[in-house]
Amino acid sequence: MTSVQTWTDRRRGRLGLRFAAAALAGVTAVALAPTVAVAAGGQTGPAERRPRVEGQQELRDLVARGGTTAALAEIRGVDRSPWRGAAGVSDLATGQPARPDGRFRIGSVTKVFVSTVVLQLVGEGRLRLDDPVERHLPGVVPNGSAITVRQLLNHTSGLFNYTEDTRFLVTNEAELEDYAHGTWRYRDYRPEQLAAVSAEHPPYFAPGQGWHYSNTNYVLAGMIVRKVTGRAWQQEVERRIVRPLHLDDTVFPGSGTGFGGPHARAYLDLPAGPADITRLNPSVVDAAGNGISTTTDLDRFHAALFGGRLLRPAEMAALTDTVPDTLPGTTPGMAYGLGVLRIDLGPGCRPAWGHDGSLAGWSTLLLGSRDGERQFALSYNPFVGRDGSGGAEPVGSLVAKTLCDPAAEAGAGAGAGGPAAAAPVPRPVPTLPRTGPDLPLPGLVTRS
Image 1 (tube, rainbow, N blue to C red):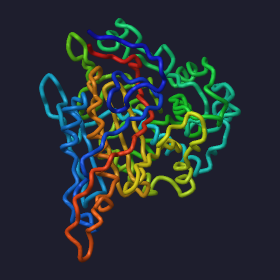
Image 2: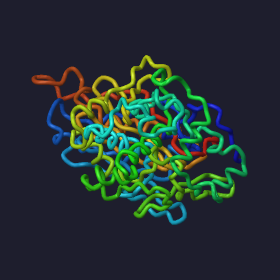
Image 3: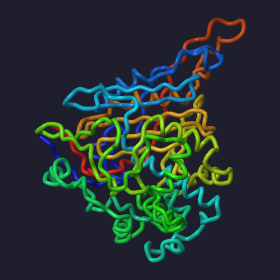
Image 4: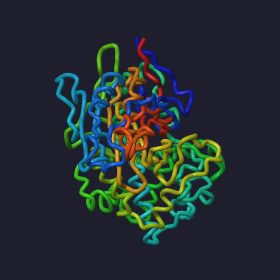
């Protein structure tokens, strides 16, 4: 039978692994199991002398053990050329293999694009990070004169996350059926409506006195972009980022339900059989999670952003200035900047910078090094309602292959005059905190 559990804990869920039906927001930490050794190689020789780093086995494992129908990934900067691969099927009915160049919903990775545009406007002198929200959106936000643009971008505003409102939650069998086969996924929203839902609730804390991941913050950031530029945030992202970087498979569809390119389908596991939930109206997440992209485009964007091609040094410093971990609500192991998160992976590994995202049936992870030299983009399709906990190890291994250096794991005997380099020692990948599921089904669908 299928059971629906109402959403009772804002931080519940196993990001990237068990979204059962994604609920927008809440912070979750996934403890990744010890991984297989990262790419074996020589002592400290150049990258091109190491065996090629690829993740095909991890993608197969993610599909086989992670409750996932399809998985796509690209790794850049570890060898001389990128590696890109796919596993699983794009369509359960036909068995068509998943394509490495497939498009997918990126969820909250959209926030990185929006924050970048806001910071470009700051660099142009068209707004300031310390501007009160009230200056740009008068009357829209309760206590808007005490909340700054910076506090929107780093989630210290205290504003209620509108997607935690019961109107966005599936709480019974009838609503679940409506989500799977009815009109639930096609409801259209304007950003002003979403902001108004948030305004009906008291804040979590006074501005600047805590940290709580809230999609409301980025809906408001998108509204500010429109107010300052006279154009929708989607148009500004396309004009300033997508076209200059030739991100030809990246779109922000507004209310559009389609993809406009090859893609894997998303499914909900029901007693009557898999329900195809690929199409939805993403206006419900607006500037907090509206985007569609590919692993290649996301890696290219990450490389340009952290390589200094999109922001001036002052704005880049602001982007990576993270919230103090002394604030209530912050998550151990994760630091949040202005639309980007940092995860410290431990000795021998570069800190990971990027973001995650998840809609019902879609999970995305974009991470890379602060210097813009290495990137890792992953998309997979959790079979909503099935246990995906077995996917932790392959995801951890992919992260390690991208950001952990094999030379750091060689045995002490390696070196001039010593024996051949020892094989790398398997190392546990640290806990990987992530920001939270992005789109409703906040009730967890479980099979028994």
